[in-house]
Image (tube, rainbow, N blue to C red; front, side, top):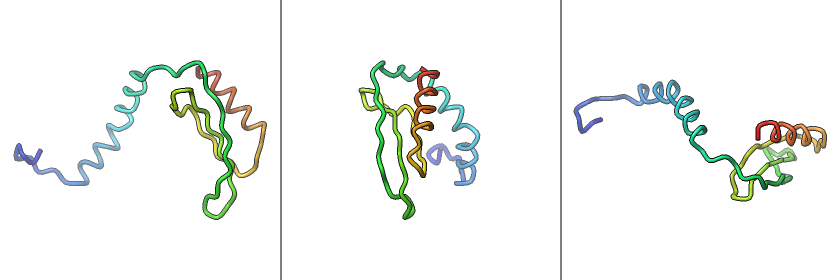
Length: 90
């Protein structure tokens, strides 16, 4: 824009990002290929802020992340809810 003689501040670009970012993301999600039918659920124990957290991550066979769940306790019921939500969305 500077090459065309238009002076734009960082604040203007930030406002454009807030306003137009969700619309662009929605269009990109629509154009994205659907995930493959084969996917798996990974469970990882990690330290976040000095606290032990459980990270559940659903990934298809091409490496596309479908859903992520982070929780403080290892709760199987919440992991099953995550699976149900994934199956409902697919």
